[in-house]
Length: 420
Length: 116
Image (cartoon, rainbow over all chains, first blue to last red; front, side, top):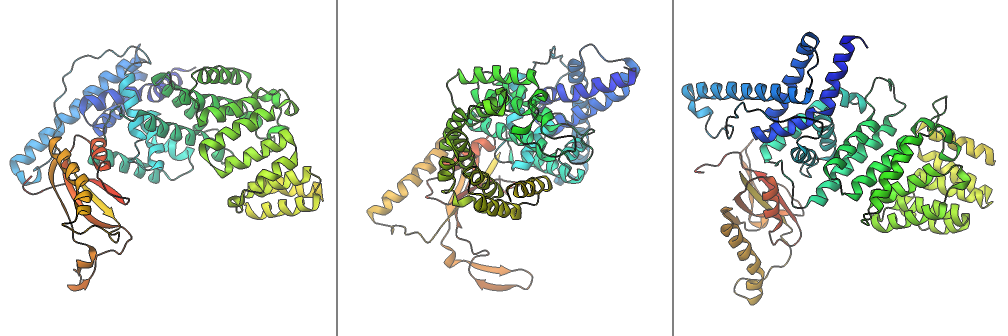
């Protein structure tokens, strides 16, 4: 690798791998997230100019901490001297202005490895997912401050204007400061961890929605980002069965992602996917993580979804899929969530395990899904399997009317032609 | 930090009249809540409003005066507290303790307060 490329890679690794921990330490030290974030950004910029000249330091995390600390102190000094000048000339302007609680000193801090600042880092993760922030802000802030992505990278990953994402992050940081949202480990930790997992799960799912859009190659892969952040969450919450459950779910889904599209970019259904293209290493890791989660006997929705994804991932052929176990897991998930979409999946799994009539009996009770195209698509497939072809065709045609997704429409049209 | 806790509730629900035993029972939890704010060192001020049927709104553009509240909503602002809390999490925990039946509790940081 040429030197420039090696330095660039080292800086990206620093930004994504370590900047969040340094940010977390400094936010606590300065008592102010904004100052800490500016300081870390200043230090990363300095790496861009200094590293090609001086070489990559032996301990990049330690380098970042030291430089960012100095940059932050400089900023606080500049601001407080500006405030002193203002106070002298126009005291009414500084009335009530907050000043930093203390001026930090230049003491050294041990930053040895990738595991430093665990407690502070967890505080930062939970802060980004605080319920006082709306969901989109939680996602953007988590990717930006915890994931170390740039605003441009986040905007590109979500195919959104940079200004929109930048504005969202600025507003969220302003609310954190002005409303006094704390960097703390909350008493109700489980609720806050649940919010963190929701955000990570949304980031992971988005990777599938965004996939297929233009310039996939140059964009940050949100699935990989979500897995990286979930791994870090698990390091900080090592005994949490649901964090393990989410990681296992992500690993099983990621293992299949290469087989999800055919050469022409069309969606490939699970049963038609080339199972030899699934990533065995990821599936094996998913199995290990899920086994560890289940041994904790603390069931939860991510573990149940991981169980289902794991059964699919471990089945050598579609026929070998243990649909009874999948139906059972969906049944538990339904009891836990009450979601009609889960009820639909449960009905399909029961149909696969016990025959189309058993599935149809369950599906017919789901009137609230009348406007959901997958409800009609699933019911149509079950009718076809039960040999009720004219009804099946009508049902699939209804599904076709309800979706505008190109790949889904082509798939439904093919099914209708095949049955007619 | 200082926060205002705004209590929004449906004011058309029947409330017991002052002087009755039911009123004492109704007010008991509020006195206890107030006392807990005082004991915890959070209390700055607090109070309740007459119902919106007594409200009058001035439109500053033309100085016109009309009967009723600024906004007609199912829940109406009926009372407030100003408290001091170390951060939003503490303020939210305190706000959650308000013995309001249904409705909403809005928590907002104070930007500036005269005589603070």
